[in-house]
Length: 485
Image (cartoon, rainbow, N blue to C red; front, side, top):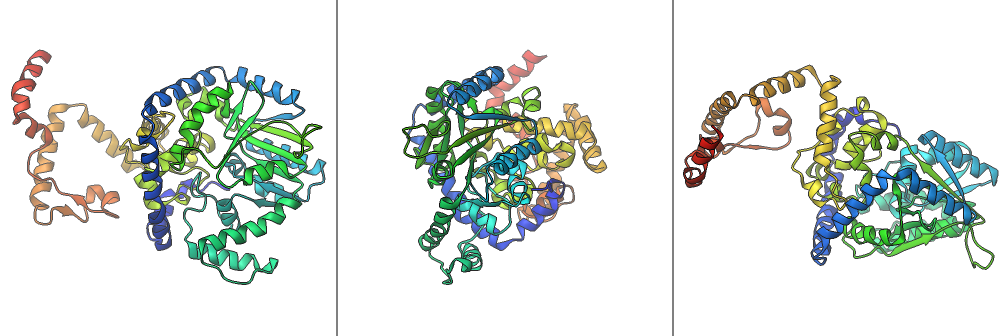
């Protein structure tokens, strides 16, 4: 997928006018939030598990080379092959070469965000090999020739009617001519089509949720079982995965798995959580003849060495997207690349260059909800502020924005001036907005009032002025100010 992040503002405007998108997002976003909250409430030690997971991943990142080499050794001892890809292009070349070596005609794929980074499907198809996505959401958007709009629910932006139209158009070639609208019937139709694809595939490609250094296994988490079929039925299995997914032991995996499904879908555990390693052994009833793992860097080492290191704790659960008011209003495609939402606004500039995505760090209210719900305790607002600092230092913002920020910084560093100006501003806003209680258009907040109203202040006083009149200030504030002096 080509980067389009430079057009984020235009994409967002178009998304806000898309009635189908509004309907699709309204149907699902409440479900994710409510189910997660219910699942987390049943785990009283939730915060303790989060703390353990954070320390675990921090330890791994401090010793990433050690655990990757340990994992490689175990995979090789089980008869598998490990390939190292510095870039997405390297990963594509490795995988296409493996497919060509076995004369592959068809490839089935499980959902993999790393393969989306690399535009792997396009690379395989360019080599003349048919590629079929087997995750239902990914299959839907493949038919639509679109990219995922969510990292765990790729077709979240599609309504049932749109899916029905896609199936009716593309499944006629298989003798399926009836237009279906019932959800269960649509799923069964997709299952009948994909069943034959599974049987015919020469190569199966999946991602991995975790790599276990002590055993050489990888953990694959799905709700549909397509990952298991993609891994076991073809004669060649390929796993494409980012280098940050390695963890030391199976016990460590159990810690992270307690967080993953609850944060992603509100489930206690996903329907399928599989451990796999290496090609089929002599006494195995099924399994691939060849097993390959492609470990992808793609700027992850740069993140490891820089200010964005904590982002490498992310295990792609999607909780930050589900709780983000910006994502909830515009969906994923507006972000213009593979990763949307708060995590995408951090990852995308790091991977494709902040000069190609200068608007994404600003596509955030900084309300902090994403950091609160992140199971890996990633300080997303802090990382977004670091990106904002870089956009300012590199003069990637408009001159008016830079001038405005410079003026605000000048005033904010001088409390007396700041309080005087804000008191004047609040008094004026309160006076002229008092009748309706809100502003539908406001010159200095045009970006906000273009799509929502701005509430008018409920009085002529600022917070600080009201606080100084409070009983709390009378008993505590005066003493604090005297101590300061």
